[in-house]
Amino acid sequence: MSDCIFCRIVKGEIPSDKLYEDDDLLAFRDIRPLAPVHLLIIPKRHIATLADCSEQDAPLLGKMLAVVPRLAREAGLAEGFRTIINTGRVGGQEVYHLHVHILGGPQPLPAMLKH
Ligand code: AMP
Ligand code: ZN
Image (cartoon, rainbow, N blue to C red; front, side, top):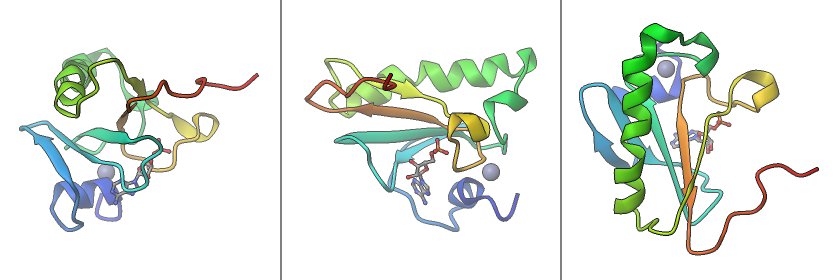
């Protein structure tokens, strides 16, 4: 996906503030942070949305979640954090390359959704 912004980050064509990388995943700071700490974890392979995943993606999805505690710890989020996956139009997804947001900071985050 040559026009996908996160694929371009994976390829190094667009710079990112990289925090973690392995064969399958990349984690970097969100360019427009919505909290004092705002990180993104993406698969290196292009997957547009969580809705495109199925049981066969369980190992990759598991890896994405399993690395969250380590990234949160290293970012100083000892007292908690929020993980978000926006999916599709209704989910408010802007970048169509699967990503997990990790958000946190010293203060509790606002309510997840307003009534
Ligand atoms: P979402 O609305 O879940 O699709 O979130 C997309 C996120 O990607 C937003 O929080 C953006 O600020 C972030 N983002 C977009 N472009 C970049 C970039 N070049 N580097 C880091 N984060 C980005
Ligand atoms: Zn992509």
